[in-house]
Image 1 (cartoon, helix red, strand yellow):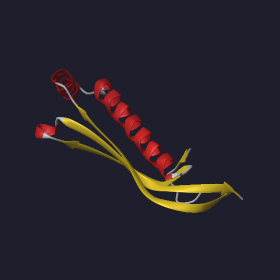
Image 2: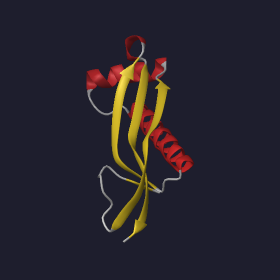
Image 3: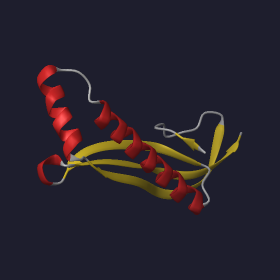
Amino acid sequence: MIITTTNQLEGKSIDNYYGIVIGEAVMGANLFKDLFASIRDIVGGRSGSYEDELTRARKIAFAELEQEARAMGANAVIGIDIDYQVIGDKGSMLMVSIAGTAVRYSDV
């Protein structure tokens, strides 16, 4: 399945527009990740544990997006937008939300 931020597929003809599809993942950040991230804030550097959690959340959201598009009969999702947010009490949750338009294309 083609998943792209563009609104067209070069060299392809979009035959059907099925509508908006969304994939979301909300991941909890635990006490140890928060503690080590706070230390990283003080001394500088990257927080590998948070990066790993964001990567995992993004992969889950993309998988949900693709699954929803396939269920509609689409073979591509165009115009995707990826949004990252911190939610919950004291920013204890990480959320990735991906939305796009499910379409069916054919070769020109």
